[in-house]
Image 1 (tube, rainbow, N blue to C red):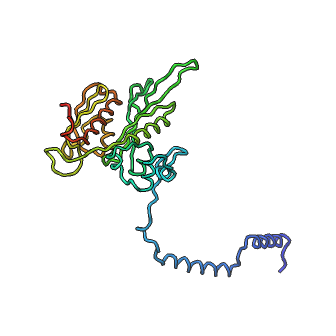
Image 2 (tube, rainbow, N blue to C red):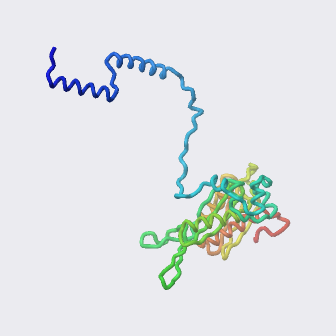
Image 3 (cartoon, rainbow, N blue to C red):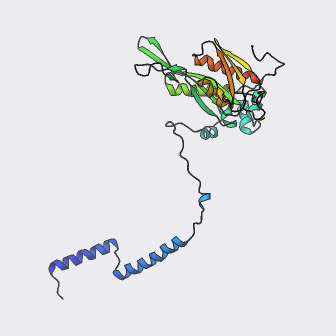
Length: 292
């Protein structure tokens, strides 16, 4: 059988393609398909060596700023500079209550991060400006200073930190930008953290669960007076919205309150609440706990 010139050229092209890509013949391809079918059947019938219960779900990390370090990274890279920090890092001091009871001064915020798991929040101490958002509460209080170069804005904020287990602290920060102000406020809140005594002390409740304060206390901040009253289980936080953030991070679930003064000043309202919570650590015989 003679081939034409065109058929010979096609045959040569196919031959080059086979050599270049390693294409198998029909017999070899059929044999390869049978072998792969047997292997596939074995994989289907083979039980999974790792049960589903052992597979750990990978949870996505929370959204962070670019270059911001996590708490674990901060603690691992921490090099203590004070004697208290060295004692904490070496394991001589294991609880935050030991530091607070001995009235030691905390100068490094990493000490608090090392001992307890903190949560943080910002209080709405400022308000928005503009045609559509004017008067709306926001976390940043903006002020301006007049200079020859123009207006220089400054942002201030108030942060509250706590572990929802009897520890809470507030702090303020001021900077030319919002995020540095937040970091300063969080740092000051950690340095000023305190212990809150919790009990089941309402006469209508006998659950023995530390869900409220032990007795009625009154705190003040500027012209604001805040009185916190124990409440039975299930009452909830009957306080202002900004005080709910403070009491929730302190680990208090049920409480009543009574306020007086200029309550719209959130800065003084939060300070009065912290002053009242600080008095829960006093003994009734030591000092007048309530002003009423």
